[in-house]
Image (tube, rainbow, N blue to C red; front, side, top):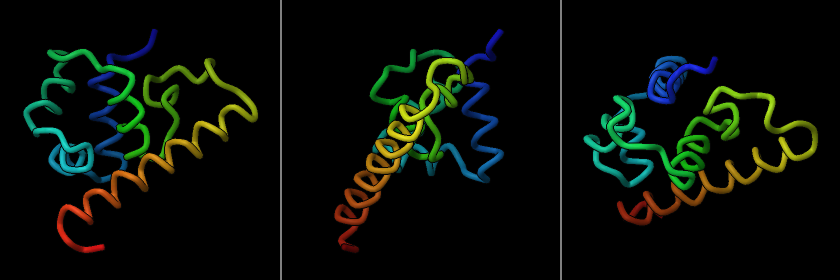
Length: 100
């Protein structure tokens, strides 16, 4: 059985030495929203799941803890999309801060 998504994200934050605040800033969400996701008070939608996966440079199936969903070339394409999404998020954050 898969662990709850909030616990999975907490584990990834620890593993990548990141904070909920850093995740919130990257996703342009409030820190409270991230804590609601971590505590299962807000259901994780696909858009947020993609952005969180991009933040950790993993696939969505890795994020949800089910590595049986995607295999082979599709896996690499999803990683590529996650990287592209991460780049977009970083570029938007830099632009917002005036650091282009």
